[in-house]
Length: 190
Image 1 (cartoon, rainbow, N blue to C red):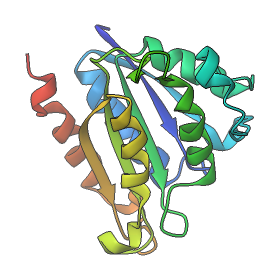
Image 2: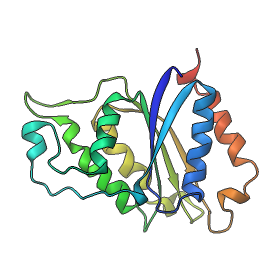
Image 3: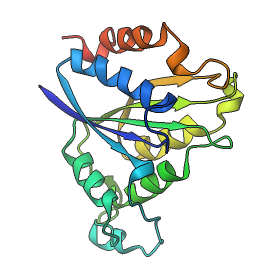
Image 4: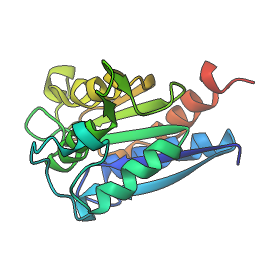
């Protein structure tokens, strides 16, 4: 594989809507010779940020848990998939806890800069039981903003609505549509 990505699945429900969409994105990336490791935040031991500001001084989070490994791998990976269902108009608590902890990737030692290299890219996935964009609330925006501030280029946003009436597993077309989007994406054209 030529590139290495990591996927963070913010849903506590393995094998369901958000996880299936991420699998389809991964299939598309695999076609582009990109290997992806997946983290399930719902089954991880994730502590929330305490606001201690240790990371501002040292560049590392004082909390040592599974997020430590994810952040280390974020530094090494070429790209990311961040995926969350919408819970009450926003990302899940698990995804929010992870994104709060990425604050250690900000370097304030001389003005401000990102501790990530400038070539990082991401695909954002938002999934919602409601059937309109308004039902998604701030899910996609809430995930995108902290990544953009770190200099990560958001190359694709995939939103799936109406899981209450049309779960991903019942949508015969969504898999091929997502794989095709990734396959034909200009970033991956060589």
